[in-house]
Amino acid sequence: MLAVSNNKNKLRNIAIVVVVFLGIRYGIGYDYFQYREWILDPTLKSQEPLAQYFAEFSSKIHYQLFFLITSVLTIFPVYYISKKYSINPIMSFMVYMLVPMLFLDGMSTIRNAVAYPMVLWAFLLLLQKEHKYLAIIPLVIAIGFHNSAIVALLFLPFAFFKIKRKTAILLWGISFMFTQKQVSEVLLDYMGLPFLSKASWYLAHSGENESGGMLWIAVNAINLINFWYWDELKHSNVKCSYYLMAYNLGCILYNLTIRIDPTMALRLSNFGSIFLMLIAPSYIFVLPFSKLQNLRVVYLFFIAFFCSLLFIVILTTPPGEKMSFFPYQTIFYHTDYQNL
Image (cartoon, rainbow, N blue to C red; front, side):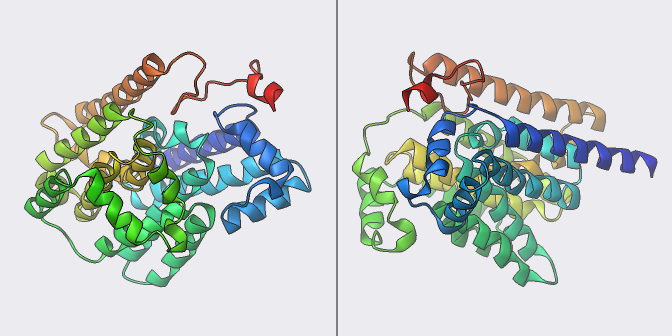
């Protein structure tokens, strides 16, 4: 009982440290100063309603308040989900921190970073026997911060039925068969819808950005590992089959849209990648070693995943360009601020 209490205290303390760091950071995140400029004058660019409201509210007090509010809205759901729904809360929280496209990139893609855990929270509420209607609250918050959260309409139905491994593999395989032209034509047919209108920018700029291949490989490689252990993971945790399909759906979205624009593809897939924080702890019970060794293997895997992607991004980013996943600016480097 004491050990459980200590783990909860550790998790809470870790979450508090992360929120404080994100809330008081200065210049960290390649879009930090663009957000700062927008908050100081919210009329410069109209964003989604909740993001716009908090920007205008913060501008009346101090621009940094916006970063504090969004930090709480991002990290609290991660903390709560880890504590309430994970079989290993600290591991779940740390996996979120170690997946670069979630935490590190989230220091720049602030509105997206709020949306990912909110959609996950909505999904988990739908898995409950009672009070499923509460899922509307995090869903509204997610869409209120970033239009991309409308993709939740694809994810949330999978909270009501299980998908077998063969079906999941089939759907995943089909996603490789669509061409850029076919996907673009489908998007163009629905471009008039309010939540899809921003996708027109990506279509207009498709072909300009050819990066992102290594990330795409990494995300799909993890999906292959999940397929291999699918049944074992499902038996270790009855809800894991839902999580596995959600991650698979994120891969499918990645495969469909990467040829249109790697950035859009990655951000859509992140709504599935965040389910790794609930999938990873189940590997402790299915890998072929002792539980303690399995625990170490899972941590080492995600640490290696974190380091590998980080070094790839550093090595492949031309000098002077912004680095995705890496908050290259610090309080000692104010180049963007000086150029405003």
